[in-house]
Amino acid sequence: MTDTNEQIRQEALEWVLASQEADFAGWDALTDWLDADARHNQAYDAAMAASSWMADMIVAAPALPQPANDETPALPSRARSWRSGYLALAAAILAILLIPLWQMRPQPYSVITPNGQTRTIALDDGSRILVNGGTRLALDRSEPRFARLERGEAMFIVRHDDSDPFVVEAGDVRLVDAGTAFNVVRSGAGLDVAVSEGAVIVNPEGENVRLNPGRRAQIDGASGRITLSDVAASHIGGWRSGQIAFADAPVGEVAEALERTLGTRVTVSPELAAARFSGILQVAGRHADALPQIAPVLGARAVRRAEGWELVNIDAQP
Amino acid sequence: MLLQERESFLRFLRARGAGDAAEDILQDTWLRLATAQTSPVAEPRNYLFRALNNVMHDRYRSAQRARRRDGEWIEINTNDAEASDAPLPDRALAAREALAQAEAVLRAEGERVLDIFRLFRIEGLGQRAIAEHLGLSLSTVEKDLQKAYRALIRLKETQDAE
Image 1 (spheres, rainbow over the protein chains, first blue to last red):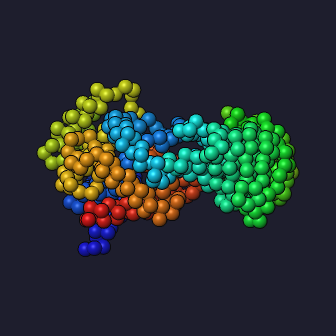
Image 2 (image 1 turned 30 degrees about the vertical axis):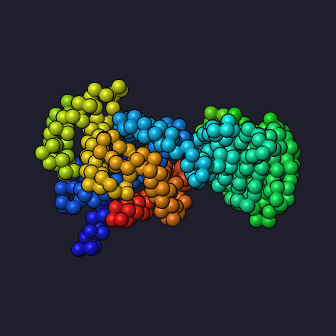
Image 3 (image 1 turned 90 degrees about the vertical axis):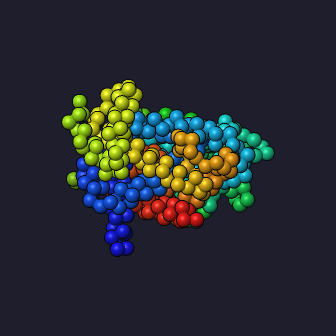
């Protein structure tokens, strides 16, 4: 009996997941399944309730940034629209009631961008975070002057306050602003910080390295070693305008940047891994299918793979 | 124009527990969609099924809510006047706590499970799109979503039982 119930729950779960897809078309098959056993409908509603409940709570929480998403068909948003009025009202009531609470309790939320999609987050204090594709950023409404970059790339344009500096954490590294616009890339364990305005202090309690405009620090995740170099301030955060600049960068790093911008997997063949690239790539308005045109600039050829593209040596035989 | 489908819709509504109300629900929902329509819908049949499914689920939730008028489980997405009698700030606080707990439960299944749940239920991406964007296989996404749902169902049952 327990097994049967367990089986019903599993089937209900699968039906809920399938029918929550925007393009679900199996309504008649779902009807058959519901009709097959009196317990099916209850199990279906229970599974649906658990997920709807949490989803509604999150939607009702104010200021969760919504991504521009042109892949989702219009249908689900319209299906939701007749609830959104109530949700907005609920959100407004919550917002009024909870302002004092937020200042005391952690209110973490994540901003996640798929590859190829960027997003701008306006913080309450007037600071802005421009988030590149393929990025995961953890923020906290109760700590508006703090962000944690878990992976990917973001440009921080921060309103400076001497008494309450903006702090970006990435792995073990702490970046503290001193009046600032700066770009941060996190890939694997490594970190790459470049400052275009003001200054950033890297690990104030440790190495305490000050980066002025036009300076860049690359921090090796494994050794913690910090390498400093110069970078043209106008190139910093160039991904925002579709120009990504590299100075003697490993091709792997270039591939990651292309991945974030073009929205496709880009891997590098082993024989090309040691190659380096200096220059500016124009990627404005370009998509994954532009990779074969971009690759020769890197001394590479783009080969279609099951999951995206691979950059191989330009002379390699197909 | 969907009249010939009427029986399929009614059968679905009855299977979803509508009983004698099936005819009325179909009529109301159909009218509401027809008057609210601003642009043509690509798949009107699926669209109406989805709307009916949501109506039935809302009815289920209202019934649950009525059963636990003074319970701990607070619904935020309430569009009726039947919610808890507790003062609003307390309810909001309880809802916040419940959300934090639900997030913790999902996080315990792994950060990726929480991410995928959000992308699916909040940002409305399909499972295939999520798999592509995160570079995962479709079955991994599906398994993670199942984990998330199972964890939430468990949590909800514990809370309902209290």
